[in-house]
Image 1 (cartoon, rainbow, N blue to C red):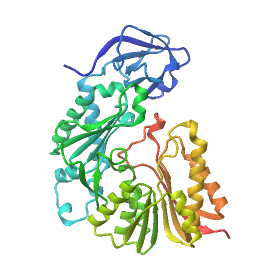
Image 2: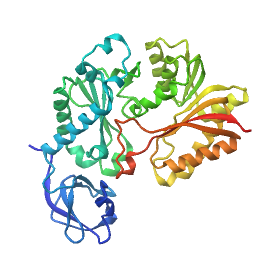
Image 3: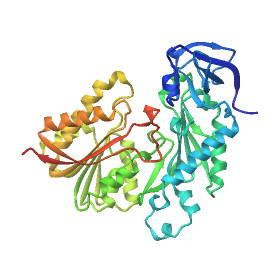
Length: 426
């Protein structure tokens, strides 16, 4: 029996609404709707029409959510069915194979260099499905080597979860990729806004949830059961490589290290020393294990501390670093708290800049889409003035290409990453 239920209902938009949908947007909000004609159950596929009856596409409806309809297809000849889901998954995988070039998979040893494409694809860790940016609303699927981790946040695609995962396994198997296990991390609070329970656990047979991956030549154990989000932040892959290139022979401070990824990239690139800091005991323990895994425990040291408390303490001791990295969690997950977030970003950037040696480098980022590029740049500029520092921009980067930015969906663009050279004022 299909997990996709097509209703006879049509959502009719109010006059003057629908501009974002016509421009490629993926969401219809409750206040844009005039009426719903026909019968449906939440999660069903419905047709969406402009106020004058013009067909705008198919999507799934949920009256529990302010995002009343999430669009799945724009064409009358492309109904939402198993064939469409397979097309979406296949396109997502083909895209990752194109942008995650085999030479960039991150394996530097001789054995990996001589590996077949199938072996490299088997080991590849990437975001396989990125929600609306892959035209599968509310679904995130990360591939960690031979394990898939799914986060399902929307009712309609949640009902299609088994179909989506079975299709992923089918499509990957055609390239010789064998998936040994699937874990669900649908435990985010936002599920409650969809009328869904927060859940986590195995889908299918249990397996060892500590998964070994390799990225940029650095090995990690990813805890897909208890780690943050799906267990590892794949979106910073290229940014880690970029900052590591500046770290040979340098003294590095890595703030909000999580499981050590930035610091380990710097240590592997030849940093003389790395102090990596995180408030989580669990995160620091995992990071220490990752350091031992790579034979870098003599170069990198981990400290469990609140970064906001530690930075002024280090400043008071007169500490200076060649490279300071600030990779904080999202300080805001809503527009309502943006002012508080700006204060947080300004504070850590002031402190971070003061700890950079004259002529050293600062890497700083924001992973909240509410903290847009313009506001983030303004906040950093204000921090530099307060710290009496001059910034020379080395580069500006975004999330890795396996997290594509869909220009008609603002939420898909969230990661802003700057590298600056920091100098004392003239």
